[in-house]
Length: 580
Image (tube, rainbow, N blue to C red; front, side, top):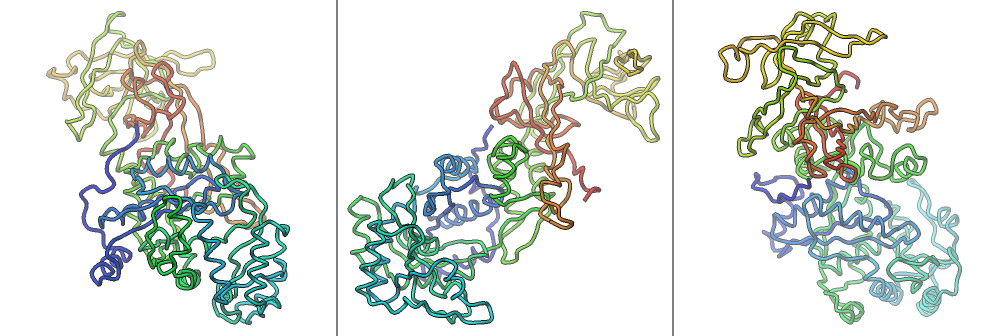
């Protein structure tokens, strides 16, 4: 089931550099409160990397008594979809956070337009007729300065006229752009007269066909932060070189002293809290064994190589949620990774280890057999039935107990029996003893095989003196195995998920190979197993440790008590450690 525990659990004070900057800003009076935002573009599903940004944006605000907005950066309508908007909101809430206010960049389109007119009137922006290819030619290189556009010195009046005609829809896509007038010789390419508006005759999901022009990301993002009163704009490192442009837009428009620009907001009853935001950059969250590119993930979905965006093998938050990852497990992972300025590729064992530790502490235990082999206890009556009491969690008595039915015929894991045991084998073999978890000690007397020579049944004897509470219950044997009652166990579809790729760096294109060439053909296996009745009764998204097997979750959509479906979330230990 979903984890609804508070993200602001009682934990030691976090000491990363961003939180120290916030503390210093509050102490110095630079800021009197903390206001953050999480601003995804609704052009795809959020993935594991976004979990770090969500935890940071919402976490910092909560820790310092502030608030965080969820703002959808919907400035590129050609690539955006309401499906993604809904999924983003679902993901944020699932991780345990809620926003102060739900905003859209499109809420501010009127403000952004008036701000652009102000820049033109100040001589800080001009309408340019260069094509996209010509703009690239004029921009220069990292070692050579750019050249001014031949349209850079247009008069304020001409620029205003052309921009207003762009707004009226007179020109085709790509015919003109509005560009900032900064410095074509700047060592920072982002300051070489960047575009602020482009012409796009595309219907917008929120504003319809009202706007034939749309603001560029840097312009819309910086001013949206300023409009909302954001104090600390937390971004990943690729935006570090954009920070001078971010500050230029905020300073040149100066919303705090331009009440006429925000009148469209106040007319619509939207709050306005102008501020001078401070942009701070941190490293992205990248794991090996995964691809995070939205383009590549879309290709996997559209080609049918995965079963949609919420396929449990996908690194999307919708996918890993269905896999059985928990919000508390992801927050634990983010805490362990920490916040830094250094980009690095992390080993996925950090992610998997955090989930194991979280589920080990919280997930109840159940018994399940995924590769069943029949065991018959020949010295029990054919109608023998009893209930045995088991703890739901060995480390947490508060989670209570449950009854498990026990009968003459059982299912055990096929791998727990070897007719000819290899050296060091400590489970069951012909003539050998093994302990049945919580039930007693059995000896295998003989095996039954089918016509192909495959073992299909074990005929065993249960030592009556080894039953719980009996004198021989503590008799030492080498191994303990789990089981379920064949008469009472519920058949279940077990989906054994594994890593989607066979190599740690699937983006490596050496030898002309594509990432799809490294897809793991064994990343999903579906088997029919048996689970104890208490497991079948699970609610969707309820996680368990299937003893000795791994951590599993009742599928979010397909699981029903009468027809259980469980997804393997993670194995009990890292089975890939020797493969990497």
